[in-house]
Length: 100
Image (cartoon, rainbow, N blue to C red; front, side):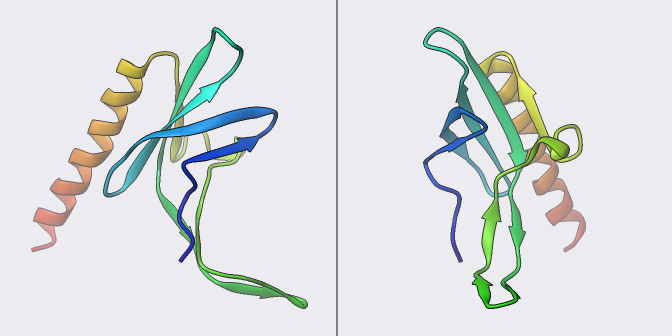
């Protein structure tokens, strides 16, 4: 499986992975030389698929614009992002305990 990269460029921005947990990530979005935002999202996996002659292996998906508010969130500060991240990670622990 192909994992999310440490750094990527999308929509004219540079994103750098700051933190990765068992089910979520925090990426720093460089908006300008002085402005940063933070993207927090659940790690989603796209299954392998073949479209016409092209094969796409199983890979983790970086959220698109339409995913925000559903399984991805944008935060103005790292503290806000970390709070959201911890909530997502704690939720994962609660779910796994319930499933035992």
